[in-house]
Amino acid sequence: MRGRRPARIVISGATGLVGRALVEFLASWDHDVRRLVRVKPREAGEILWDPARGELDPMPLEGADAVVHLSGANIARRRWSEGRKRVLLASRQRGTRLLCETLARMPTPPRVLISASAVGYYGDRGDQWLDERSEPGHGFLPDVCCAWEAATEPARAKGIRVVSLRLGVVLSLKGGALAGMLPVFRLGLGGVLGSGCQYLSWIALQDVIAAIEHLIFSPSVNGPVNVIAPDPVTNREFTRVLGRVLHRPTLLPVPAWLCRALLGELGQALLLEGARVSCARLEQSGFRFRFRDLESALSAELGRTGA
Image (tube, rainbow, N blue to C red; front, side, top):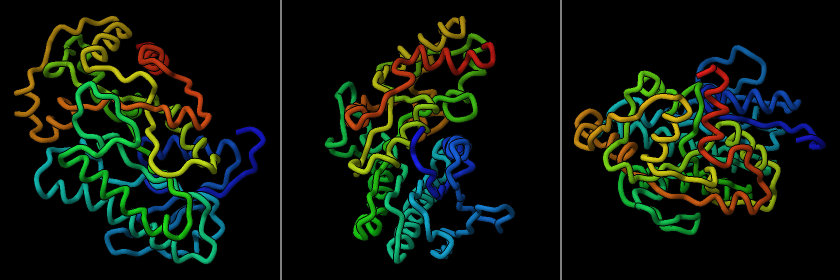
């Protein structure tokens, strides 16, 4: 980021795993970071919005160079009842459309909108290599991702450069999948999930943040971009590498029926299915990964705590 002029960047979802890290990173480089919040603003740089009520005043957004939209209910927090699925979809579709319609009404909108999506777009595709030209999969997660990305259309129609971040599984000790599984693996109770053949398209949190910054300042890039590391692995390989980094055995497999019994449709989609996704477009845009392989990423992350 050296040599880039400071920019005004508005971020939604700033309290989430990626959002918190992004705010800290951008602020450290003297960017003017503003945060969309859902409670009465208490600090400078906070902008009130209420997606449920369709309320967002465009005036505080004036002067923004970029918007990074990361807001959405946690997909893995609880089992997917029909009511929960409606919440997950609405939290992405409704908030994205409100933001994009607001940006489209601005006399001078930001030049770029970076809007979150996920590799869940591709569904369960075995060992097939997938890129941004691949068709969406079938099921709840692909349907959510398609609706999420489609909700950015008002901004795109306004002429704003829109980038849809198809994020993989973000590896961090501060939250997400890795933080959730570590207690079990540290006890030596970790093991392969189901067949172990399902692919995990992962990325280190540091690379997510660097990729977002890169895409903000890459004017030639628009549309969907897979934000994942170059080395997707099967669940069996992920289990083996995590056990080796932790110096723990991984001999206790979890059968598919148990994943489904405990977590229902969520367990099937997030634990037993996967996609082998290519990051070629991101690399062709000039992005350079800090962590290209899983072992280096896990070793760096876990080494911070002496794990």
